[in-house]
Length: 404
Image (cartoon, rainbow, N blue to C red; front, side, top):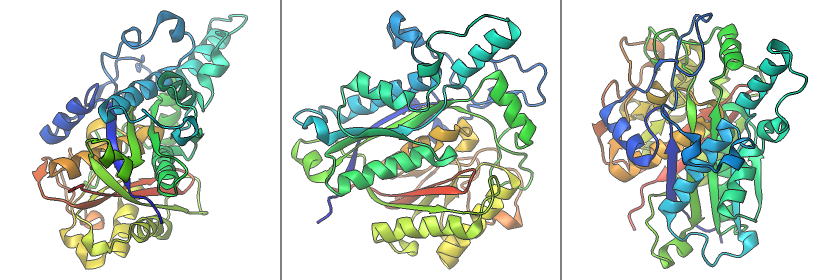
């Protein structure tokens, strides 16, 4: 018999603010955290905007001896994991060492890499920072999370580009549902706002110059964001027994691989991942009340995602709200699925639809209710959160409002 899975803790850090309270307030108010890039000199770049985490002071969260060992991405991961675990209360109390795990998105420490290359090639330094390798390794964030929280059970990183955090949360969900774990902290963080990575994304010609406008006909591309999100997943019976606050229930997880193209999304595969999540949850398409879309605001992604939604939901799509919060906190890449999951949980818990900001013009190829420009009150019970990554690696989470 499979176990039900409760979400008992939430953590977030993004352009909307430093914690869950700020995230929720920003979603409801339609705050847009996108603005002129301040942390990197963008004089030589065409794209001068991003969704930065403003005012983050590492020294407020870490001892001086730690700062040379931990990249900005891992700093974000530890901060949101701490928030989520604090929110969950004594979730680890009484849990056997091998039955609590941490699964986070894999992400290169881009700041460590950028700094080391600048030292070697621009400053002609004889060597980079001595801890460049541990700061840059893709498993750095989950390692720091386990050390910070005292987690000793199954813990690892998952790399699937922009689906990494969703794959991490979904894998943790399956591990708890199957009985392998009692508790897991899962999510992802990332900061690609470095000179080298911004120039690299600019070279792909997918960045917007003036804002993120998912599903709007005049959309101009994505906006790079940074940040992180984390959830505490827990065996439902255990969560109820200890009197935990349950924010929502995770009920399904679907995955697929396009096997087609390294950058272009595939409609059939995106649709399959959504169907698999609903099948795993035992939910019919017409029972879904809200979709947190991948919604990158590129021409190809948005129309392909809309077509996939139409294939899955049919006539139900006409009354199904579908919004993209990337319009508010940017595309946080490997962390995006975690922040979108947190957003979906808050929508279920609080009974509202997060908006798609920046929407200006109807696109017949994106003929959906994208909740344009303002949040709406709505008693939603069931939702999905979708992530469709470069390389065609897709992950969809299914969630339900917890009603006791």
